[in-house]
Length: 365
Image 1 (tube, rainbow, N blue to C red):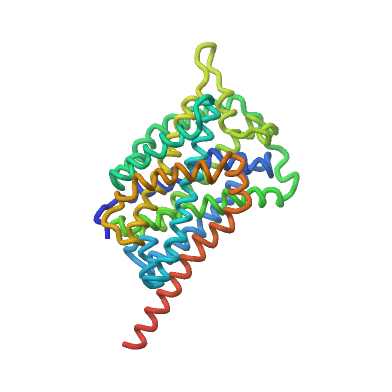
Image 2 (image 1 turned 90 degrees about the horizontal axis):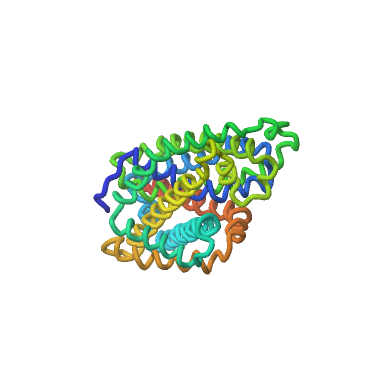
């Protein structure tokens, strides 16, 4: 069991940036493929997915306290079956890491480095995250603490400046097409991204009191919901119906900002922010994967697989997702059901088995 401890504030920031890291890159495009005017309503429904994740986490930490997700599966399901399901979770972490790196690579390649081969951009990101993971959980969590004050300055500034171009008519009429397109658009952000909050279970044993994790997840859900609604309102209000044809609608909304004749191209701040949050998310998931590998294969330290695992993520991001279109297809068609089975089904199974074993032990005694 690791002796590393992280604070509630650190886990909250880590979860916020883990969802927003790639969410602000891919989710807007996915949502606008189904609904534009009512995109902000889909973000209100994020609370439903967040509450589902919180409920799963609450059951897990109550029945399996002071254990990480992988260790909990091994303790509940036994050394063999537990490791089989642990490997399933590790594959999920690996796929999310590959997807995240591919999203960040595509974003950087399209926006600021169009002449640079994507595999070089991906390699640089993988090495940076591998180094942070090698240095330990404290470094990974400190990255979120470092970027948060900057985000508190940059985000409100860009939001306020974008408001001058907002046209409320782009948001009207509300629910003109009914609830069906809204609910269809809500599947990916409100199921897939909301369930990613359960990555926090892999860090539960590092908290001084892991029973506070569900409360922290509720806080994270509220923060992401508010930020998501604001981003949706401003983006659609500024860009309008053309948001349905843009790969990065939020970026286009930021690019509309002009201050006089000398100050423009504030989208650079947004691009740097996206790059930072993508790296934070990648570091969090990669560290969770390394810790899981240590538990499943009884390694002496997570550092043994930090660099090699980073190179594996680099290769998977290029070979597994050959374009951003494949990432979008994965998130729309595959991820919702896959994430529900992995992040709801397996932890609940472990909880039920452990609860049954405890009850049987009491009867024997």
